[in-house]
Length: 474
Ligand code: NAD
Image (cartoon, rainbow, N blue to C red; front, side, top):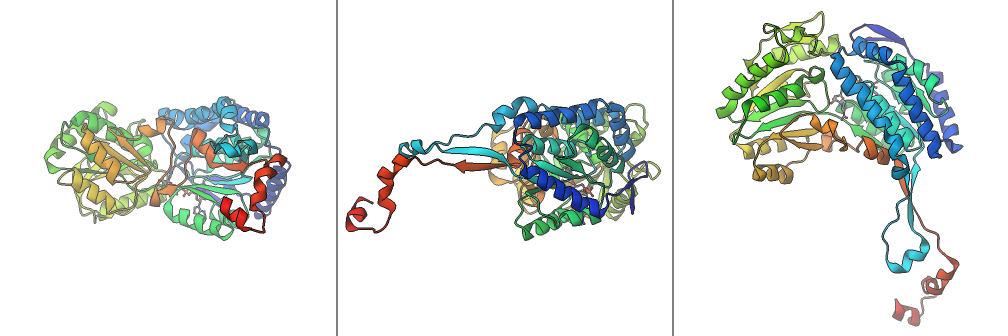
């Protein structure tokens, strides 16, 4: 069976089921030899990864365009540069891997308590199509840096990138420590029946539940990087329309809205909506000049990944009972392009059910910030929460009274540029990735003590029989 997907309609050869089992068995055996324990070996693999990217820069770029068709600038910045940044883990590895010495009471100093940071074993990574390079290789890097072996199942919806990984991987990386599997549901289902030390899944919540349920059978720990509807709240006090418009549109339009942390919908009072919508018009003209209202034809406007997702977005828009207050309902089925829209509606709209993953903003009126908090708290916990406000009291309200993966004031998306962990809360997932947080995710903090012979002088107390004399001392 072959997968046909993405913009190029490319097909890839699926890894055979026999090979899936074989790869798992080989890496399991290989991990047990301690192959990845030395830091030098880990650094060597990360250096291989850097060469795999830079020596084939054009092919990676072409593959991203073929599968997702994101603007070149975004492909460079949000895919390739991110992976190079992750590889700089090489410089931090000695520090990250150092055993931790816990603070203990004086009487236990002689036990030399320590937390060794040990690799977990063979990791299974299941990754999505929307950032097929960054979210795949970024996590491979964390897992290798932490000294694990890795089986990687990239998304069948990004078949060109997946096939390129399967082709180049063995040339630059040790096949005894990392292997790429080409496949879809069938292959992933088989992988989920095998025993791994940790499963790291990035994608939608429906599959996240399948992964967690499968892992539960063997008590395998899981990280779930999911998505959801990340709200934008705009406080009317000291509101700067153009700044807000630029920052929310930029975040929404990156990769045509197909980012896990894309701002999904807007909550603000009626009073500021005309100014916000007007400023959005101005921001669109700045971003996509000379396009006469068809911004989606601009080379720097992203596209929906494939026919199925394009139809899904069309259907959500068609079924909406809201009113279009910004943009026009236009799209191009030939390029899977969708025009940016703001649709004024309510919480029961078709656009307010699932994560949109499209350049479309539902706009929902709230009375004030408290009303916005009530709305957010009545729904699934979002991956990101964006709040535009200059007020310390309002910020404090969101810190204290809402929960989400991340909380960003006065911007969208920008948390991805900063060295803070990426991770959800509740329905948007659990566990964390990126940099040191990714390293920790794939590491077992293994407490160890070494009890000296002389400790017997105080340990005699614990041995039975528990005489009245011992009871008196205890
Ligand atoms: P996808 O459809 O490519 O699926 C992800 C992976 O799951 C693929 O490898 C696929 O083979 C596998 N899969 C699909 N169906 C399966 C099944 N029935 N059983 C077993 N495995 C299966 O990607 P997607 O889910 O469409 O990606 C988009 C979603 O990912 C969005 O919800 C987005 O918010 C989320 N996401 C989250 C993050 C994050 O870091 N939190 C990052 C990117 C994307």
